[in-house]
Image 1: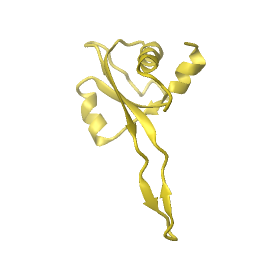
Image 2: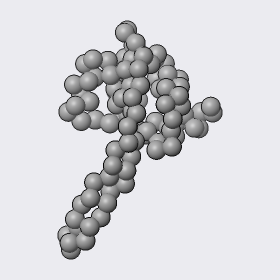
Image 3: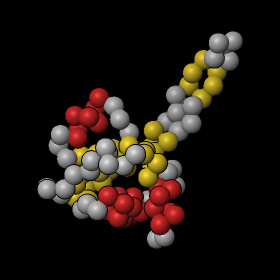
Image 4: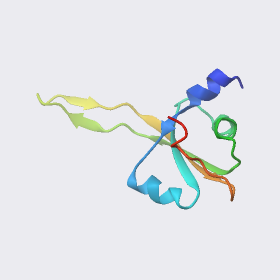
Length: 98
């Protein structure tokens, strides 16, 4: 896999209250490309952050339906996220990337 593809797979970290608590258990959450597969995500995380991935879970998040100011229904785009658990002794520091 080339480096351009790796950089296009990991779109960024997904930060929420739940993912902050998971960070204490050495598990991180990323927004990933909708066409990315598990092996691609695993290789991209291991290469870009120089860590070893122990476990990986991927799920599709449906876009929410919202009502606009004039009453028209709109749907936000669907997206994909990946929960990545790292081996003991490995961690990702997002302060260095940015």
